[in-house]
Length: 283
Image 1 (cartoon, one colour):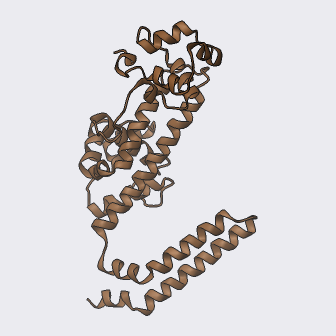
Image 2 (cartoon, rainbow, N blue to C red):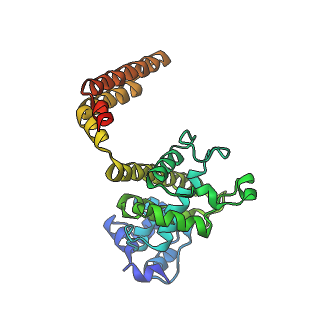
Image 3 (cartoon, rainbow, N blue to C red):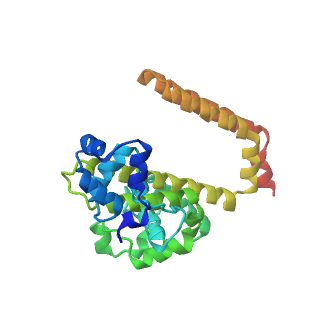
């Protein structure tokens, strides 16, 4: 489909909004006035590189220039697969193959997933769906059985609009990036955006797992303890982050960690004074 015929001459609208003539466009972009006129009228279709060049020139995105208004909140099967694929690949990133059920993992995500699996009392872990050879060769593709496992137990991820939006943008960028030649001037830009969106998805997945555990597996003793120290804990963490970000030397950072640890120990004493754990033992 020719996007120019669909976009109601957005190229022409942008040009006129800038008060540019076709001669101006030729002088400023190097695109012949006749060629640009054909783009405006939908007679010919710009190549991807030209779309990006014009998008940069007008200060808009390529989809906007093409007249496309993507709904990033639509969750298609491709969107779900992308979320689960990122979940799966990052779960096995740094996983201790000899002790896959451990919560002392290199990956924060795998740590969170394993903890939730414990709470859910699931009989299988993700690694159980792979053959010995696949594990030995570290081949953890999103095969059908593991995809079903993730869908059945982690479908709550599909309720996060921020994650859905990021996944759809990730797909859009991936589609463009994979078509670019490595020598293309826009290759690095799309590569960086692709990796940025992937990292954001991982962060959102971790946050969603944390939220799910808090909402579904919070204990009475945990709620009581958190209520007691919530304000102090938030304040201490905020001070810790500020101190780390403003540290001038490695000694400053080291002192910040020691101080934070001391303050956490103080919060633990507050909990002990309330005898929360004694109440649990007696019940």
